[in-house]
Image 1 (cartoon, rainbow, N blue to C red):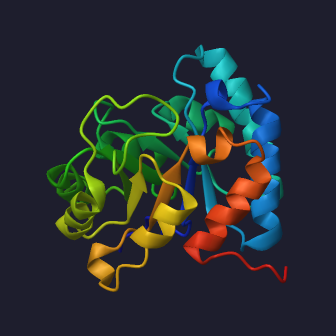
Image 2: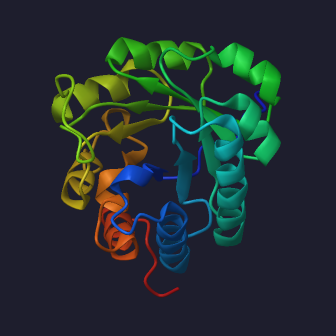
Amino acid sequence: MDARPRVGFTLYLITDRRVVKSGDLLAACEEALGAAAEVAPPGTVALQLREKDLAGRDLYELALKLRKICTRTGMPLIVNDRVDIAIAAGADGVHLPFASIGVSMARKLLGPAPLIGVSSHSPPDVASAARDAADFTVFAPVYDPISKPPTTHSWGPAGLVAACRAGAIPVFALGGITSARARELLANPEASARPAGVAVIGSIFGADSPARSIRAMLAALGVSNPAR
């Protein structure tokens, strides 16, 4: 029996402290996840810690602080690449960049319960992630990024459809995702051509109000509950 957990989130929020206008990543995470918890069910938003330039000790200390925020708001914490820090901080999973250790090795280190996500940059990458038994994959770039200059050709909606059809695995669209684009991408009537959700950086962390922006994104994704 497959012991891997089902991916329950729809919004994959990826950190980048360099684009936070206040300069305070922890405050931005608290604001965004707190606002999400007010309008959406627990587990709707996953937070990926992706501060690749931080030294191990600093990344671990940041992971511990984000673990507390995620626990308080009921949202899962994913650590980028560093399986050791994910384990030490009690994270809910890891995200493996394209050149990182494989899914099978990460699973040996993590055990059966934590989530394992991988990066994909083409439909064949998505198919490979599915064969490797990853829990989900992030496909990028769909559009030119908001948080940094483009470095490669964007796939567009048609490329995303091809990626979603490439393997039986939840696909999250990354790159230039705004609320309007998220609504359009998830409106595809064909389930096999529709992503499981979207991954964002600049549209939330680079916004004047992370709380207002995440509410708008969740509404576009159709998962917010204003009555809560």
